[in-house]
Length: 123
Image (cartoon, rainbow, N blue to C red; front, top):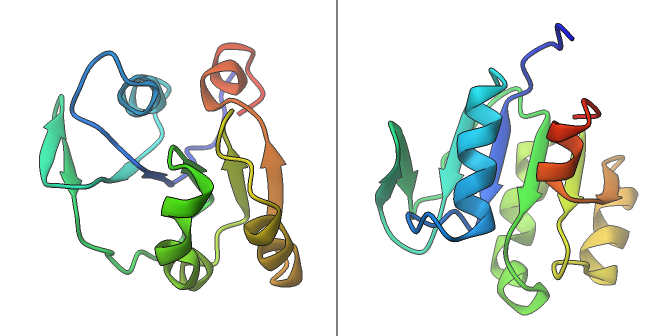
């Protein structure tokens, strides 16, 4: 199961261990994927910093969403500027408007759960 590391932007990252975004960051890192964690405010998930900024990052494979559709709107341009290969819409983040924008820009829109994809070797 030697997968190539996939640079992943976790949008909606939280420093609270009970949040799915926290679990996603820790499990992505445990699987060897580099992570850029973006949240409401600066903080940390283990040794991964959470930034409230919108860092321009090259070579993004995946953006995984942990924001409800209304909160996603302010990030549309940013997400598209990253030119990821795919956007994972975790449960509760499904957004027809962003799915349409992604597909129009050649980005795969994948309704899925990052944690399940990781645990089943499909990430």
